[in-house]
Image (cartoon, rainbow, N blue to C red; front, side):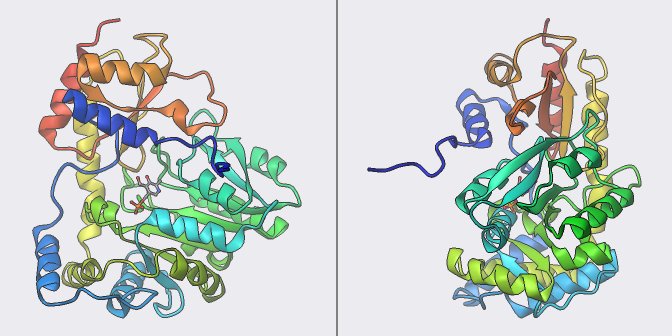
Length: 381
Ligand SMILES: Cc1ncc(COP(=O)(O)O)c(C=O)c1O
């Protein structure tokens, strides 16, 4: 008979809340996707390439011209020098990249440190590799507690999962965090799987601290990125993984049998656009920071409290001055009764702490953000 390999896993909260938003006609600030179009030239290029006949399998590691564009972007924006041939792999979404990296290096019995609140795709991938996720909570400000992590490391620990800018909290790591991480991974001979899909969404003048910019971490990390987040095309499901040649070789062994390749005309369109407008991603921080501030400004009269997100396109709101309700039920109730869908933050924890937080995606038009804020302001106690 069938014995589920993932007995704890059901349909993700994102799917459930988005479905509820559609069913009830609520404003959907739950799932992380923009409600506006990508740059027009990018969408046009996709159509052109499909019509021009670029519709068959790309090379397994990705189109060379897109890998070259990725390497050029890393050099231009991060001063990181990578070889597109041996260190960049185009994947059908960062989710697939993260899955493949974990399958490539985690063996049965290995432990993988994850930091709670944790993005929900990591643990199933670890379990399918036969590994065990060791949950270490971030501190109350969602900063990393390196002492706690160091205490959680055992001789079986193989990988540490990192995510900055962080979903769901919107926190970002610092250079000091990179140094702490580097000394930990050297001390215990660990690898790092670094989820940097929101790399360009860092606010208030802060810098994105990539593992690729640190000499020790550069050799020991898989860094994951999503064109979906950077170019507002989450439905195109295309991203890339950057890692040293040794790690990339193992990564590709898995990737070639999970999906083999990413979608060809999408890769051509992205390569064209990155070539034509290489600095487009640099415009994102200001534009998303403005959306964040617009949303928070419109919530000024509400009884929610918050710390403005430092990165990502998610804003946490603390509702403890409004109700004592548990966030999971509250989310559903407010979607039905007040017409705004969000995500309960307890969903991202193995052991949720005593806190009353909901996650709202502000990658939305001003009109939607204003309406959502008005509805949230009108919620009675
Ligand atoms: C932290 C994080 N990692 C990975 C992903 C997945 O990216 P992709 O759509 O490229 O698979 C998301 C998407 O929401 C995310 O928030």
